[in-house]
Image (cartoon, rainbow, N blue to C red; front, top):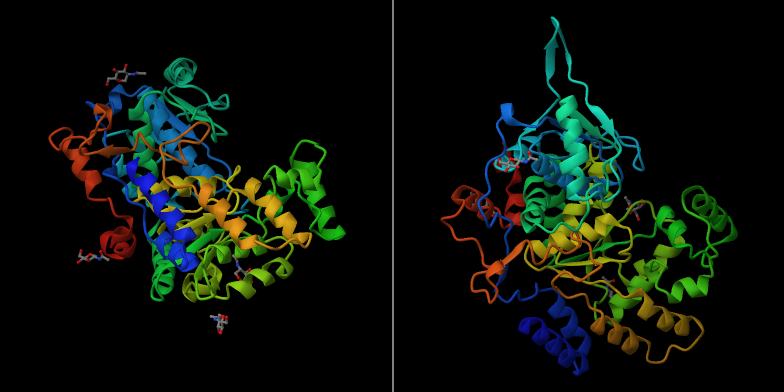
Length: 482
Ligand SMILES: *[C@@H]1O[C@H](CO)[C@@H](O)[C@H](O)[C@H]1NC(C)=O
Ligand SMILES: *[C@@H]1O[C@H](CO)[C@@H](O)[C@H](O)[C@H]1NC(C)=O
Ligand SMILES: *[C@@H]1O[C@H](CO)[C@@H](O)[C@H](O)[C@H]1NC(C)=O
Ligand SMILES: *[C@@H]1O[C@H](CO)[C@@H](O)[C@H](O)[C@H]1NC(C)=O
């Protein structure tokens, strides 16, 4: 942890120096020194291959739901569940008609052959439940439907689910988001999650191509940052911070809230002081400026439809005119294909590859959470998570006309609540932070942290080592898949 300590000291010195702002922002463009830690999700104990077809306990079907990233975690969970149960996994079904009003299936978003190949030593994956012949008739094996308990523990899959899959030959778990506990004691299962999330799940070539085109354009000007601006109807309604909106807008938010969330008294001032209110685009701009980023900074904006229209974006654009989103950069020919889940996938890739990533709301936003974990895994990339609770009183003072020392105070908060890499602390999610399970050291103090030696699970190891750099994969996507 020495390195992190030094990093803070360095930042502190930098912050109090004369050159203050410039140096801070310069420092942040770099990745953080990992002090000998590197990403590794290969097994560290003997890991037998999945059971042969004839020894499988049955077929596992799952139906994922939610947005792109919630479904992504569900896919990781499905693979782990199949492994736990010695079951054959049927390619997970994505939700086609939820939030995104999108028809995309797994095959439209992810590279299926790569997915199956990468996981061949972990689980057997098939495209469909097989047909069976009974009493002279051939028909599809019917999967027994189960709605698993939320965050079901491993034991539930080893008992209830196992009994049913053995009895019926196939089970269908639906819905399947958050249906396996995030906390699993066996680190091998957690590493399997990382293998799925960071190695097996690769977007389809057209999505990778669009993303790397965007990244290359932004990079040609130097570095760039990405911001996940969660200033969208559902999030704002959920947060319940309505006072900044017009009466018309408030009506819309309130209606959405009544339809989707439990009733609650919402005191704007209180909610804001608790850090419950998403940052407005203007607040994000003010934070960046206080940290020393100037109007030449290239910013990629990942977001759905921003609520409240241009009124909120205007002050931000005035501070940071070099602002782009995927519909502004992408090439015309791909326009038709990159929508809904696929559009979200492009945002995901660009945010993953950006030099700095700033989520403005880290509540129940799986997109930002998974990206934080993914960026940590791919080389300790800088993520800045503004502490809304600590910033709220500073913004409120400014709104009430007490603006003196504003930038200084914002910098102080950003310094102390920076969000530098660290091992997971409760209640952080495994998907937000897969450290320590999916990281290792060549010269560890603790034996469990040792990187797997090359002679153990040779095959697995070499397979994963070759893929450490996602950028190479991203830019070479066309070559490798054609
Ligand atoms: C799965 O197979 C392994 C051996 O390959 C065995 O040790 C384990 O008990 C099996 N688990 C179940 C749930 O069948
Ligand atoms: C940034 O601001 C300066 C004035 O402070 C102005 O001269 C310059 O044109 C601006 N650059 C951009 C890209 O807007
Ligand atoms: C991208 O920005 C343009 C121009 O500001 C806007 O009209 C469009 O809705 C944005 N698209 C997305 C997906 O945010
Ligand atoms: C892409 O692959 C080629 C050969 O396979 C390699 O020479 C090149 O360096 C790769 N490009 C990047 C950006 O890594």
